[in-house]
Length: 391
Ligand code: NDP
Image 1 (cartoon, rainbow, N blue to C red):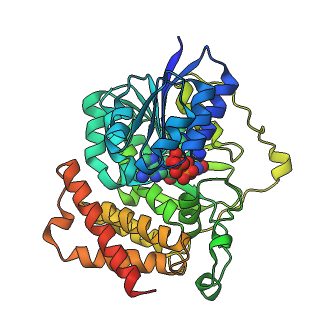
Image 2 (cartoon, rainbow, N blue to C red):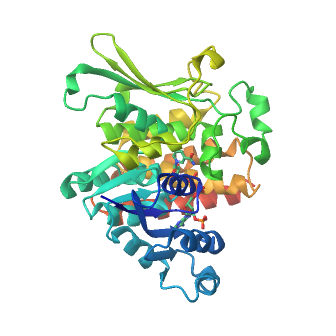
């Protein structure tokens, strides 16, 4: 049966990889029904003309006219703005790829969960900022949640979810990013261009900076805790520069099961799209002789404080992960705009978290989406204020 597919964030790195797999597998397998972007009207229109979805949405109204002109004469429905983006999440589909970047993906992804179908989760920030609320909605709607982040996809592939007590811990691997061997002095002088050149993975700008600061691994730690219902102490992080082992599960008898593959996001995307089957993906086969050695190191959370901050936020619970994520989004955007230094990233996040830690409601469970959005908005404001005072 042909699967109806929506891609929230189709113009990004995950979105484009998803479309390339759809093109590779032919029209009988997947039928693209809905695509969304933020500002990139040209790319969204190009995708729409090629894949002929029923509905396309551009979140930013400033580029609406451009999209309308590019799709004039077609019968593709066009939606503009935030409400339309949420409607895209509930557009009838069998598989929805959540690939918007940041907490901006929360509401459309929650709308997608409302369909109770299969959801491929790349947008880790929407789970990090809403935690238990998100997972409760997964359960109450009967959604099959398929992790797309390569580490969580790896764990999903090797974890026996039915026998919880058999599992001792989850081990997330991290490439270590481009600055793994840098000293603290070198890290202080890192430029935008250096931070944007990841040694292994090709990704969008924000996640590339998160990988360089190791905040990406911090967000993934929180993501893993919610996805697989494990406390912080049952999740380890190890540096594995080759990115061949995508993550592991350690069982109580000492067995460690790992999932391996070439570092190519099309593998976890294909796994999520075809689940519970598998589909062919044009990925370079793994050649272990060519790779020859796999290395492992302990992460350095003194040099990379983002890891420590994320672990503390997970252990604090309540709104701490929401605030961590929001402050990170703002300070990373400021770094990408060359307004702050690389070392400002953890400094800003820590300062914003400290400010919130005095509030009683900070450690209490989040009760609603408006709770999440309230903390998110205030954390962004605080991060902007910190940046203005530290330029
Ligand atoms: P990109 O920056 O490449 O793409 C982001 C997508 O989201 C684009 O379609 C963009 O539209 C859209 N978007 C951005 N801001 C908004 C907004 N405010 N409202 C609506 N849509 C918006 O990101 P990636 O593809 O790299 O990452 C997507 C998600 O997947 C992230 O959560 C990331 O952490 C996760 N991920 C990514 C991996 C990768 O290899 N790239 C690996 C594992 C996880 P436009 O193009 O118009 O700006």
